[in-house]
Image (cartoon, rainbow, N blue to C red; front, side, top):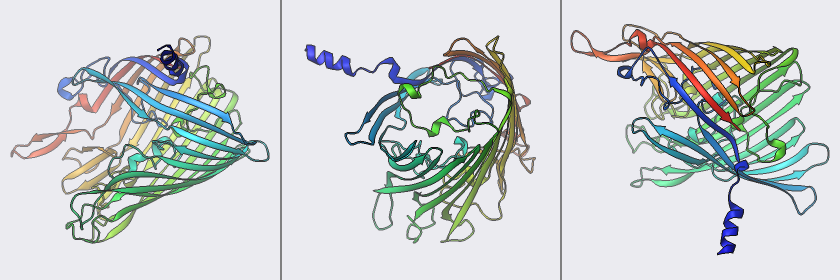
Length: 492
């Protein structure tokens, strides 16, 4: 019995094995002008995710969450000279509240557990490595800004919960090249049998990059099997069950005035390592630079996949999708200014569905507009007060399309809104956020924010004088949303 107890104690996870822990208590209101009748529950501690459309561009989550990662990590020198290994079990814990049932719970998922074998090559910082992602390889993807990145498991036409893979990478200082593959098991349909079977779907990814002085160049390319064509008029069609094959091409170029300024890279695209040389004393940071400094990074992505041709029966067409951004950072001592431009056309937003109607291309005569927006933010750190006020503003032309039923705004791949019937087109969206962050310790901050969004595309369905249901504009209180966040957040 004593031996069993000792074994259990030896295998118990220590507090230091939980990395990137967020614990936030937040008092928020998405719209103080509206109430429950307008689906705004009034100020509360329960709801999360109150933000403007241009925030959290490089992250999966808003900064009012509570979550943590359990990272059990090991690094060893190999038995043969010049070889080494590392491995990590990475589990993500997300406590949540269900406001409809006032119940709580915890989601536990894999977030990139991996094994890695490294071979040192002649020269400094020169290696060849093979990384195997045991359960979910979604951190291994193409594209560079997280909001524009692609190739994770969410691009499958039918949802999958696991998508392991492997990556072979050569690296020498700031130059690298990689190839890799992923696979998922999903449903397979065929006209010749009843029901469904299991089928392996593959993704192949490759890329390379280099730093030349203060310049950065990166390229990537991938081939993907997204699923099957199912929305055909007749299951006897030769197109029924045909594989949806997709491709992606990416490129990025960056320049910085000084190597003291880091290039932008989302933490969502990196693996977790629980070792002293990778850990931070504090996650709190403020942009600063002695004198003037600046950074410019630009990205362009081209995607394509073969979908059912909306304009021709029993035919397919390759529908292309384009997105890109320009991110700029200007630094002057303790003042930071970010000015960014983002472009996504409608097929890019809908790529993971895939298509406006699953598996079907956009009709050629359909009138569409791309999503195009700019955002700017200025912040200034006052070290003597440990306080940083900030102001951000963004203006968006939303992606939209017009059909015989009216015009619709496509905010994201699964979130859209019908424009009021008396308008021929969508209107621009304006948003702003003003706030301040008080650093209390190396691990805790207090944040206050006031958020304002004008979205005149919001509508509701009502009966007109003839009794027909039409879309009319939402009330001024809904279209002019004024919200706030009061947060006490620890991150360690």
